[in-house]
Image (cartoon, rainbow over all chains, first blue to last red; front, side, top):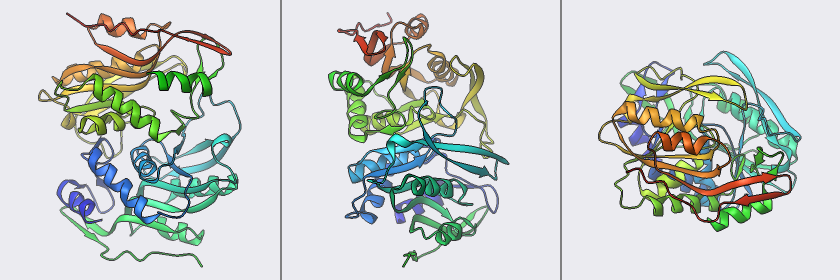
Amino acid sequence: MKLLEERIRQEGLILSDTVLKVDSFLNHQVDTALALEIGREFGRIFAGRGITKVLTIEASGIQFAMAAGIALGVPFVYAKKKKAVTLSESVYTAPVHSFTRQETYQISVSQKYLGPADHVLIVDDFLATGAALVGLVDIVRASGAKLAGVGCVIEKSFQEGRSLLENKGVEIHSLARIASMAPGEVHFIGNETVYQPS
Amino acid sequence: MKLLEERIRQEGLILSDTVLKVDSFLNHQVDTALALEIGREFGRIFAGRGITKVLTIEASGIQFAMAAGIALGVPFVYAKKKKAVTLSESVYTAPVHSFTRQETYQISVSQKYLGPADHVLIVDDFLATGAALVGLVDIVRASGAKLAGVGCVIEKSFQEGRSLLENKGVEIHSLARIASMAPGEVHFIGNETVYQPS
């Protein structure tokens, strides 16, 4: 997605070979017009697939799940990182290890909001280690829902997330794929090679 | 907002005199069409006020800040509850006490995204004790930005949040104001009395 790549070049702050800050337009301050355009792009990619629900994880996936839900005309669900005080019913859970924070937390989704009748698109802001996305894929499969695929806004293609998901047979579409980066420069993978499970 | 009150009557789960679950359509699973309509209502209320930015707090305020940002054609910013690993620059912070979780946490907003040139609308899902919203108001004032007011989706009018905010001279608009509730019944305040600071 050219518009997104341009914004990353213009406003992204590359703090090291692995850390990219996009908090001026994607995940702290959010450019709502760009977020809607990102949602429309996911809508185009997954059009006609009978998606019934978008799934993400709090907090920074919410704006993109909302935008994708708007584009596809469906609700979205966000997995919680803490067990809610009022979340008393049965939940699907998965452990997620955060490498940046060096901690493992549980994510959960109420069993009321995912089931065998659903066809799910998972959306998140970043695909890097893939830890959170693998947890969401496991939750979709535990629910009996059908998984259409995963849509990521930015993929750090030099990290292992994509191969972890591909090994689970997951179709992945990332709107900006970073091949490599270093302070002052970022290289995108020009043509997305879409992995289509057979 | 009649549409919202009807959904609360139909789908809200009242677990006690103070606990209302709306996670089937507002803050776990999200009805994107309703969220957009909520945003349009905030847009109508605050139209022509020169709002430059919507401010909320992660996670469950994000969908409504996004919707309000869409309606007003402005970006939104969400305060973080944890210090981000990549959030290295100066931040505005405020302590927030969660009565449900019995813990105090810091919320923060990068100083890059709020300043004297901004005219801010604060949006959140619930106004109850007002703790999080008071923290957001303090952050807006610390930044030198002008505060237009606070827009809440659901207000528990029997709790102290509104009076805490009014005592700080804040204009508040809640789309559904609950006078009282008990398992099986909910009573709304029919006509919103808008507090206009002099």
